[in-house]
Image 1 (cartoon, helix red, strand yellow):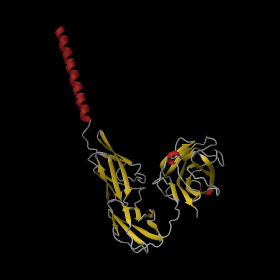
Image 2 (cartoon, one colour; image 1 turned 60 degrees about the horizontal axis):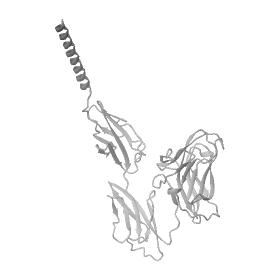
Image 3 (spheres, one colour; image 1 turned 135 degrees about the horizontal axis):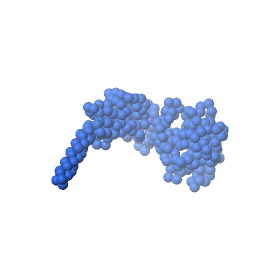
Image 4 (tube, one colour; image 1 turned 180 degrees about the vertical axis):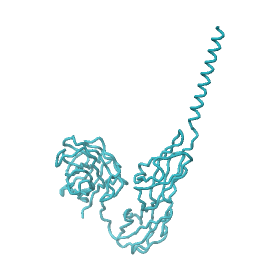
Length: 370
């Protein structure tokens, strides 16, 4: 009897081991750990993306002028793989230079993630000098003005030019240039051409508009005042209209808070140094969902010599970017070091009740005396 029980026990144990092994093999056979999850190619129109499989990144350069807001990439994948977002589905790549678009490839039990950036092909002149004089470069309109001392012979000049690495330039560097009339400089880069017009002017350079913040190339940190923080750079929610630049500053204004400051401040490490004898106005772009006053507070170092400047964000264009002009008091002589931006100067319910909302500002500039 004991032998019989022993044999039955051994048999059951062997049966259990056999069933466990079979189940394990079945589970293991269901797990495909060798599936290919690499993107094979990524194309936007005729532009082929550069894929870094190790970093999981893809970069694409498209022709200048391409609308990045609705591009439909064509993606080649391994057999049985799928990708999300799907190949051919339009995506907004306008902000991909700072916030790449995420693509994820699935195949079997595996997946792989890629961060995709799409940028326009662009070549720029970044500096134009003659002697100790530097040209004023307007990148948007591709214009360069350079002011030279009275009596300079404009027919025989040797400019020093800095431009995008890898591009070629004409006229070439090192030779004489006749700037007695405007001269066209042409950059050629990746099959695209970019042309600047250079104009020489005899005389002293006038004071220029001083860009304090623009969300792209001039992006000092704003300390939050009465808010949890200022987001910058933040994607411009309305690029079709007065303010077409991709980034701005933003914060959430709480409808429940009472009076007091709600906005951001440039001071301490990000303070400015503006002489009111040379600059007598500020301009700033504002976007919000409620009418009312916008306030700039200007101070000297140490929060001294304060002035409060106001301009009206008008009801007729609520929900749109409005450019507002603020006059610096005519009698002010103290330098301006701190600038505080308050997009809505009123407590809630003034001049109208409003819900908690996100407010925006951009293109803060000091304007020279005319």
